[in-house]
Length: 173
Figure 1 (cartoon, helix red, strand yellow):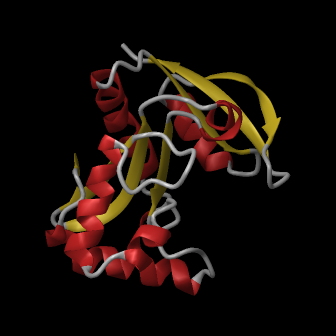
Figure 2 (tube, helix red, strand yellow):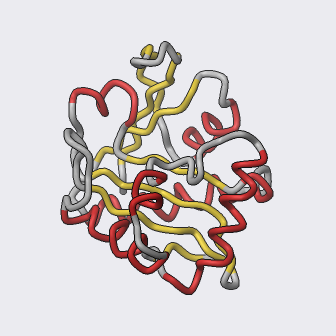
């Protein structure tokens, strides 16, 4: 299992992930890339645009550069993680430096812990020495993942959608 930059070789597995989310009534990617997917000519164009986010390209107004990685195992897309290069006022309140999602069929198997564990050194490479990671108050599993990876609870915040979020800081060693 490893973190990789998005790649066309994972297209079939990524599309299976999208189908899993749609069955649950969720967005096509669950990680703010549905817009890019819908605006892309094909999967290769989508992958190029995901990777370009690290350079600040193809981002909506007000979004910061972020590096997207996919957690894969044996050619299978397991989940994705975004590492935001800096915080805005909005991200400081509710999004944080790192956001991750695991495909529904792979949840409860330890992949959430692994994706965050692998993302922390990548954040450090970007100069992030203390990472803010948030989760919904009702997402007990994610809170446990954050705490297991060294997250120190700071406080709660209510985001623009009225969702109560827990805010944690992780000092990256």
